[in-house]
Length: 378
Image (cartoon, rainbow, N blue to C red; front, side, top):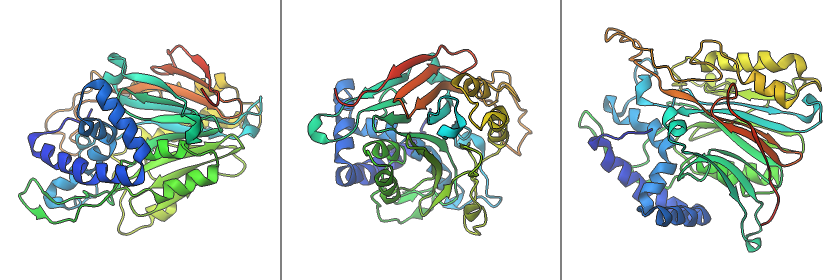
C-alpha cells in the first residue's frame, strides 16, 4: 500500500490533476469513463480512483523527490521507499511445452498481504457493448483498479512484473525534501498499469504491441504479453525505450521476475537497475528448475502449479508468505530493511487456446483453484 506523507500529497495531487487526467482524456477516454464510473459507484472523487490506479507509478518516483532529486551515488535505494519492489513471477508457455498443446500464461501475483486479508483481490469479467467492437476480458485485479493481469476472448494475455530504473522521473515541477525546486513542464503521461488494459482492448497481437509502444509513460515495468497463436515475450519498458526479452527458441517458455534482463539496458551507462535484489535473483531460476525438464510437451497445469509453489528461502520465496519475524537491528544501515508483509495474493493460469482461466486467491501451495471460461460477447 502506498502511504503518502503530507509532503508528497500535494505533489501527487498535482500529478493526477495536471498529468494523468489530461492524458487519460486525450489518449484513453474509454478508460477515463470507466474510472469515473468506479468513482461514482464508490462515492469518491475520480482523482482518488486515478491515484489508486497509478499507485505503482507513484511509488517508483518518490525517491526522485529525495536526495536533491538526484540518483543516489550507488544507484540503489532503501527498500522501504518502494514497498512493492519484489513482486510477481511470470511465465509464458508455448503450446509445444504442454501435453494438451495449449498456450498458457501463468503468474504469481505478489503484493501487500492486506489485499488478501481484506479480500480486495477480485475477478473482473468485462463484456463491452457490441458497438465498441472490443473483445471480452477477464482481469485479476484489486478493488478500484482496472487491471493487474488479464486475458481477452481473442486469446491475448498480459501479466506484469515490477521494474525499477534510474530513468523513472517526476512528470511535473516539484520541491524535493531538501527544499530544491525542480522546474518541469507538466508532461501528459499515463499510469503504466493501464497499458495492460489497453493491450487487451485489441484482438490482434501486433496492434496491441503498437499501442504499448505508443503509450506515454514516466516509470518502468515489465509487460509479459502473449497470444494463443503460440507466441509470447517480455517487454522491459522504461520511460524512453522498450527492450524485448524473447527467451531461448528451444526452451518453449519465457520467464521474468523483477530485475532487468536485457543486455541493452544493462550495458547502458546512464541507466541503472534500482532493484534492491532479494528473491528476484533466484525466483527466475527456481521456476525454471521446476519446469525445464518437462518443456518438450510434458508440462501440465498441475506441474506448473507445483513449480510456482517453490519455497526456497521461505517465507520470501517464489510462493511468497508474510515475513512476520524479520526484524533487522537499527545498525543495519546497508539496506534499511526492517520487515516484509508481502505475499503471493493470487496465482493464475490463462489458457489462451481454450479461453479459460484457472486461478486461486492466495499462493498456489494452499489456494483453492477455480476454473472460469471467457466467452466473447455478453
